[in-house]
Image (cartoon, rainbow, N blue to C red; front, side):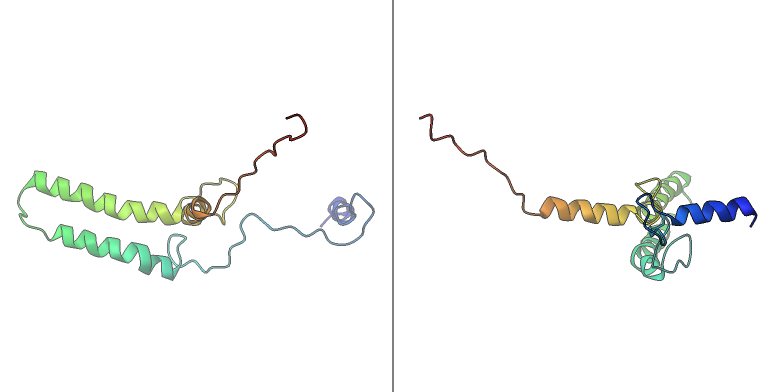
Length: 129
């Protein structure tokens, strides 16, 4: 570290109101899970990807095997069945937050829709009646 970087680090430690100490923040990429393959945990692989692979192999074993058109139709369904869970697990709806995934976002949205809504009604003015 050169002298300018040390100076900048010391200035960052001073808060705007004169309070000294470290400024705490949560980084954008904080995640408490261990990733195994393609940014997915073991639980996600077993829950979402393994059933999709099993269904895809089942579709692949459906006869007839010599029809090119039927193989193209099967390939379309196999790709569709595998891509949907991968996108569900890996897509990030908030671009600058690595720790928010689409499955968490959808779960939060569904929970919000189920939550009881509170409506406030403006009270009637009884003095003018």
